[in-house]
Amino acid sequence: MLDIEQKVNEHLQTLRPFLNEDEGDIEYVRFEDDTSVLELRFLGNCKTCPLNIMTLRAGIERYLLARIPEIRRVEAVS
Image (cartoon, rainbow, N blue to C red; front, side, top):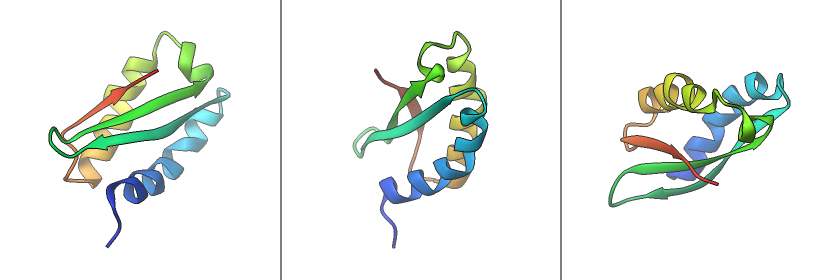
């Protein structure tokens, strides 16, 4: 069975090409078991993009919540 980090990284590989189009990226930081919160870090142009919260909520979070039931929330960290 895959652990959360492996699952997240596999799914991020699917999302990464869309972020790379704008010279951005995202990386796994950690998963908090007690709160079921996944922490990700935006990289490249995504880090300073004013729309990154929309990308996180409407795109990345929605995608990951539908595929990894252990996750309850996705947060971006610096």
